[in-house]
Length: 250
Image (cartoon, rainbow, N blue to C red; front, side, top):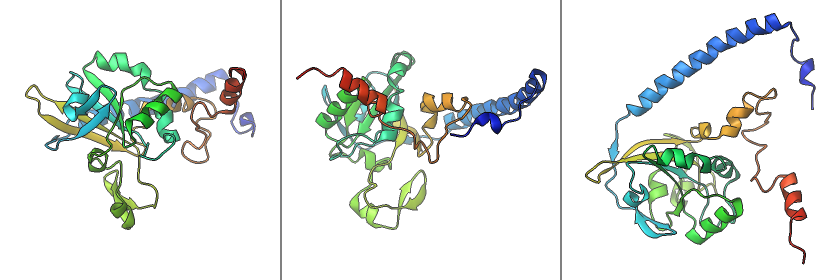
């Protein structure tokens, strides 16, 4: 691994402060741009959801309205776990590692967060136990939900040259029938549900706090491809060693 100190000018403290102040101005511009984009996001028009969807949950079958759990706002993370997958997508799993701590804050701010996958509920629950997660995660198996919100793709769609993903046409790739995304919904006092927002590809990246911390580390994300360093948290070498050390004797 190259020595970063050989690649950066080493200056006096006063020179560093001057350079840091210049960067601070750019960071402030970024913050103001983010605020402006957030305002535009909140100003987006809405689409009423008039299709009935059904989900399997540990508490039994629920409609989309049931997923709100008594709150008016719902965030759905489209988690890549297909019907016959043995484990969830590593990237989705990386994001999911950051969700549990948000739940009390979201729930007390009138927001329910739920992950949705097409895998059957028993497979979801098994993987959830393996990962040690507690956030709500339901199955849309047998429902068009993930297809309608462009996070899952049928064989017919994949047989075409392109698929509709992230609000554009991208090349269809055989076997890539699941892709990540996030969707937001609002339920009014009469029970009507509206789709207010969706984001795909790198759009949900700000939910991944680890990346935000790495962006401030000396080496940054230190990746050759997008998140190529990421593994499921129980698949890092030290995690496997720890699991072996704490295994029950035969």
